[in-house]
Image 1 (tube, rainbow, N blue to C red):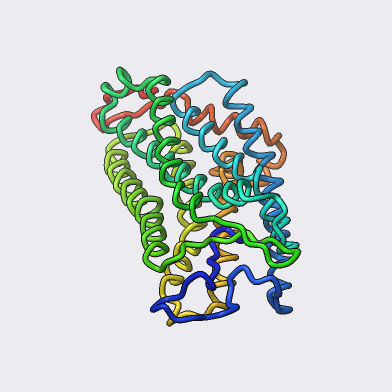
Image 2 (spheres, rainbow, N blue to C red):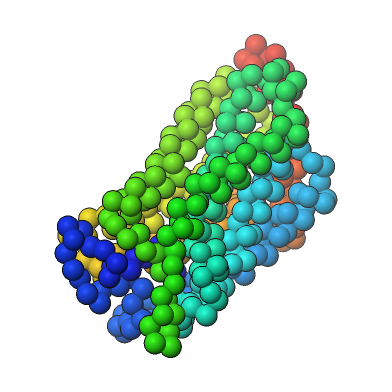
Length: 335
């Protein structure tokens, strides 16, 4: 994927010139060709599974189940992943041909799609983990004030914030014509602007949200030690979603941060690392439906049941009134 590769002809650190060195280079070596084939295959699988799985989640949560706070979170998460997967074929085409015939508007949209997905996903994980933490810590307050309307409002605010944070990626994406070939590339024009965008993206779209999520999970774990639950699946699903997001995005952020120090990193290594990292980040968009189906279940038993029924059961169990019992046998009903 060419999500955030820089046209190094536009700028170099310390104002040094490095002509004809581009991360989006049209010509590739045999090893790069093999890598391209692998990444194209991976992205096609991600696209097909992401479209099918997330569409199924939206259908089940939106039409087959009663609307609740929890499935409001999951519907929004599935919509975010579905939107990214829907635009992924354009990136696959560009990876194969190294030619962008879709114009400047779609060049900007395809670049920002991954980052919109990143922000919306991690912000939703913050909402989900915080919501669960509040449910366990303040069950009475939660039962009186936790409503679908308020959850929907939180989701709207999350989308607005995600869109705002994605604007820099939308602005810096440009197209350039080289003869009969058009390139879609990221042109920051200056190293300082590149650094500001990358650090903002890392801090606001990864570091701070992950810290909030970890804090919420630690509080949740402490609270749950004194409680007895009927089912632990809701918390296993949440933990799996968080771990999945973390594992899929850490490589990408690692190479993007390394990209800020070109003097100590080779373009070839960054080229390979960014492509693999971006593809792994994209893989997060189809993980959620699989986690809903397989988490906490015997694999062979799961395969004997329909995909849609397993998702519905995972959601229903997550939404089911859970019994939490204190060591003194005091029962708390949490919706």
